[in-house]
Length: 441
Image (cartoon, rainbow, N blue to C red; front, side, top):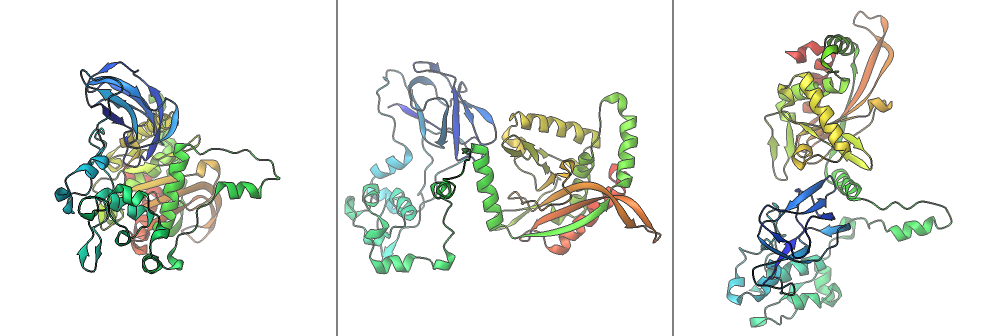
């Protein structure tokens, strides 16, 4: 039977993508490793390779199609002797409905990766455990249990049509939550206070502005991902904020002297390069801050992998400078320039913008004095950097003087980093910024 070629998950967070361009056509012979298509994710356009050999049968999704869900069939691959009308091999979820009843009484193998999907590192969601009624197990296939959970159905109220009364996909497809007895629904309904807020409905909002002129902008994949991740971050991460003003005068003088010495090399250090280096060194000085939240545990990282927010048209990337604590300022500067350039061209590979334990968002170049940044999970913290401004301060001698002061705000995940720990990090960071030569040794 023909093999289904499925929409791949090209990054751990990818849920859908745009089939930007087909690199093959129906009837083409392909081998493992041949390029099949260009897939546009929320972050970049990537090439998709064949994992099997055969002949392209039917192209099911036209190029340019947006919002194609991961694991959706996009084409068929024929083996020798097959024609384009061959029935595709069943996916794992369909196959489990045809399996022997005896094999499905076990709850230890309830999910299966689609058998013809490229190895993308993702798998189907686990099925809920088998329900019981009066102490007796209700027999239902894993697929039926997953569908029932998604629809809010009580399987104890559904009559199965499969072997030995087993509940199968068709039984739950034809049922609705309203079919369950009122007592069952009441028992399974969480308290109203715990119910999530209703999602924003675009049609309702548009009606509010029916008499006003506006331009409607459809969300692209990147903006959808940003919206989802930041909403999740603010709803699930207990943020708290630590603020500090730091004297930049010594750093600006040191930067000017270094850049004068590097004039012939073409390297020019930015204040942001010093901030990256100081952050990396401070994470080594306060290693408990160099950590990420992993659900039921904390992962303390060894190296300082620092992510830096880069604004691009329609969104942002956070490319990561790995091992930043061990790199010279010139190396950090060159790497950051390269990553920022390729980010704006959307040419970064996933491993270049995923990972890290800490992030920097610098809006100082836009004249922003101070702000609070949202943590990018699973990071434990993010540093918001404002503009350096000349202002009057009281000097060490007690006299009034003028200095260039920079305001920073550390947003911290309280599950990972406590207040005193965050304060230690900011003290270490400020020490490197105010005595910049100390970060060069």
